[in-house]
Length: 181
Ligand code: IMP
Ligand code: MG
Image (cartoon, rainbow, N blue to C red):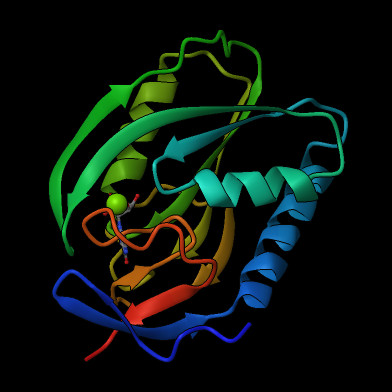
């Protein structure tokens, strides 16, 4: 099915930007990269809610080996501007010491969330900590934490769909839309 030529969410209009096929290809590639790096291990994939639920669901379906999946929740975004106050909302209640942990994000923008995540996982005594994100905005990124697996690099413009929202709308869209100028 072709995506709608334009969609309206609250007060804004969005246009098709990244297709279902491109998304699927990028996720499959990330899954093979992780599998190649941790072939002899049983990694724990930690999805960061809410945005990452679709990415994680597809990622683990593409992941060829044994793995565990869990989720945690943080929030740093209101509307189309980062608020720069990241809060931990739902923590991990699982022992991750000695484990290979791959944190899966929907999108990395300024990197503020990533800094918070890194600090939270530092206390967990994990064996390996890796970060994966489906979307990455290199022009907006202001941190120096290495992002180990990047799906698709995108310009510094607001997107919705495939888990990503504009004031909670748009997460259910199977492909990605970009804010119309
Ligand atoms: P950061 O902390 O600035 O990297 O922002 C990360 C969070 O902001 C993501 O987990 C998203 O929830 C949200 N975000 C950043 N860019 C976008 C976007 O283009 N569309 C929707 N949400 C976004
Ligand atoms: Mg959001």
